[in-house]
Each structure stands twice: as C-alpha cells, then as structure tokens.
Length: 280
Image (cartoon, rainbow, N blue to C red; front, side, top):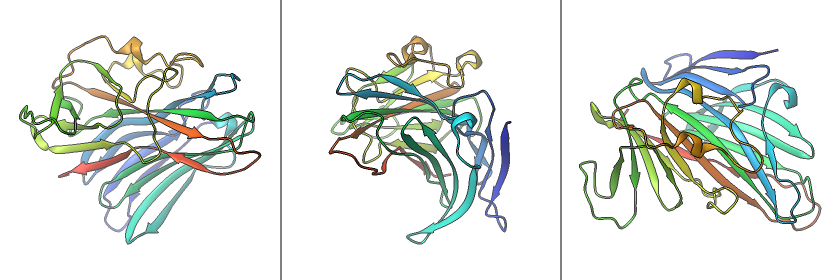
C-alpha cells in the first residue's frame, strides 16, 4: 500500500512545502516531489534509487533498494532542534538481510538539505563498501533555464560564475571527490544550490566509478529504482553528451561509504551530501 503526506513547515510561517511519497512496487525509497523553499522551487523530485554493495571477500555484489516491502514501521515526520537550528526530518527504517538502514532527510529552516543514509549490521564478515546513489531532479526557479557548475580548487579560470566554477554545458560524469557542484537558474544566476560532498562520502573506485553526473531530464530515464544492477550502476546509459545548458538538469550524487570490518559489531555509519542554498 502506498503512503504519502504533504508538508508545509513550520506551520506558523512555512518556509518548506513539498509532497513525500513511498509508492508500493517502486524501489527508490521516499520520493520528494515539488519541493519549494521560501516559495521558490528547488526540486521536481528527489529520491534514493540505488545502493550497491561490494565486499572485499568477493561476496556479492548486491544491489539494495529501499521500499515499502522492507520498511519497518511508518514513515516518520517530525521537528528536530540542534545547535540552534530548526529542522524538519522525514525518515524511514528498513531491513535488508542483516542490514539495518535509515533513510533520513533533514530540511533546515535556513534552506540546508541533508539527505543521509545510516547503515548498520553485517551481511558477511568482511570489509565492504556501500555505494549510495541519490537522484536530484532540480527545478531551480522552474524546470527550464537551469545550469550545472563544477568547482575545482586551485583553478584560477573565471567562466563568468566565479573563479574555478566551470559551466557544464553537456551531459557529464565526474570522478574526483575534491570538487563541488552547483545548480543555478541562468536568469537569476545568484539563485541556486551548492552540492558539497559529505565527510564520509569517500571516493570512487573500480566498482563504482563516479562521484556524480549531470544529465538532461527525460521522463523515460526516471526509472524509479530499476536502473542498474549489482555489477553496473547503468548511469552511463544516460550520459550521452546532450546539451544541458539552460535546460532541465538532473544531478546524480554518489557516496562511497567504507565499512571496515573489525569483528562482530552493530555500529551505525552515515553518508550523504550537503545541499546549501545560494541566495534563495
């Protein structure tokens, strides 16, 4: 049975409005639709369609997905206060084999978005990596006129968006985790979102080879968890070089969470990007 809810938070003077849903039969975890901050659109849709797991022992690999079928208990929506900031939290709890997984999203009062995956448990007694794929269908100020940017430390070039910020004009995948990204609205270039790598998000390897990708939105490519397999994430099928300058941009973000095996344990680990608003 599908579950959903509408959010307008905080109730006394809303800054965040959106629909969340978990659709029976889909495997992309909680999908957030029509997400607005301060009345300006951020996402058409945001979700977590895929987790790929590789063990150093050679077990697997696996493609894990979060769904109603493996969810334990209801979706929780609650307010959380930390370090002087108010947050709205939307989360679901799942079990897959011996894994325990919490899909948790923070929407902070000042516009920060923190999508997080928390994992604990061991399927096999071996060091392993969780490669976690978020899909962000940005609509910064609307579906059209968006532009993705990549920042490279130490690059003194100015393409018109600040030193080191390179416009991504064609579909592209990214390999190096020392970079940052942004998606802006070209009509209002100071309005957008930065995409920063989280502290525990690691680096790509031969099994999961990218840290992100910017692609053109196509409805047929929103596969709701059906993209990829245990041995291949399949994202390259969508990176064909199409023009995305001033278009509707989808950004894939990939975290590479290392879980070092030290013996039987039940320790929580977390990964996920930091999405910072820019002059919303």
